[in-house]
Length: 160
Image 1 (cartoon, one colour):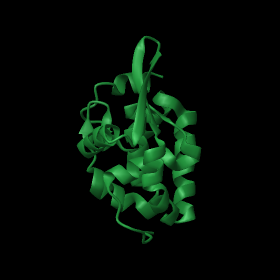
Image 2 (image 1 turned 60 degrees about the vertical axis):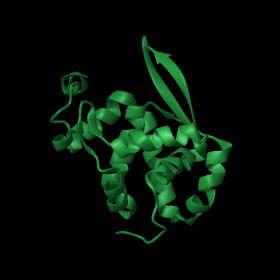
Image 3 (image 1 turned 45 degrees about the vertical axis):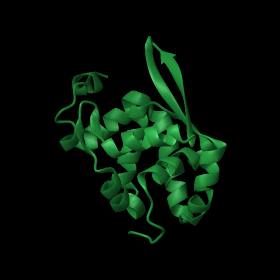
Image 4 (image 1 turned 90 degrees about the vertical axis):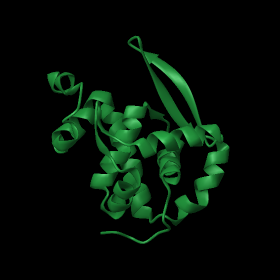
């Protein structure tokens, strides 16, 4: 069921996800885009809005969005998000967090979201953290197979 709240931009949605769950960071671009993708399919109240804004398409690592990519760059350039690198098993990934400036920008809009939506976004973030990289990919690849037709890693995902 769609609920009414102000129309949000891609940048605002990204900030919302970073603010949710006590401003918990999101570990990796792949994880971030998959969280938004899952929300666009599984959080009924916001799914249509997210699909229209992000325009997900099948890519080399499953669903992706150029709008997401461009919005991340813009948010970092204006200082609303902060990034840092993390190396795990000789692979580097970016960790995304919200700055005080970004939090101030989105706080009022975040407060206007229905409580149920804020709870569902927080729950999704927690679940994604618990699943980890492989788990989130398995979830997406299993439930949304039309988005993996171009995947370069589907063999690796299903190998686990």
